[in-house]
Length: 149
Image 1 (cartoon, rainbow, N blue to C red):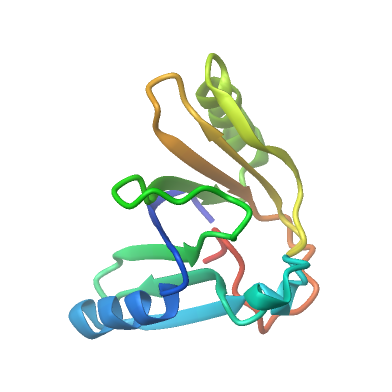
Image 2: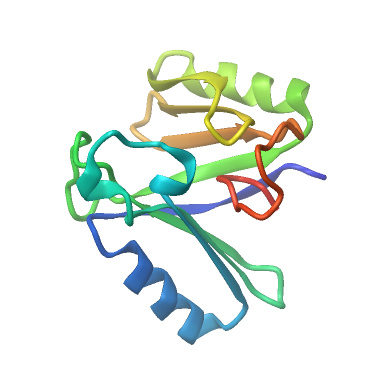
């Protein structure tokens, strides 16, 4: 797998509706995973919210999105980030180190509930980044996880 760079959109409680809309516009395959599927939230109100959605079109476009957890701030207009994902750990850790240097780490780079190594940061220019290193240690092959393609 090569490293992939694509937009990641944030929503407040309507990611399923939005991602389904984008699928109707662009076509392609849409996979959605809830917070409950990965035990990613202790808030019962979030169990059916989308933790990760990925739309992949026949032309190779990839669009990702998720509901922002209630515990995180949400400001319309500031609802996007850039995702870097792949399985080249050396390359992705180098990107992480450079992007997070001089910026703010919002989620430390560590093992995530879906088995990959994942981190979030905002670079010194205010751009939000998600970095996902696929490790092959997934609990179940029938789940879609952030950054996995």
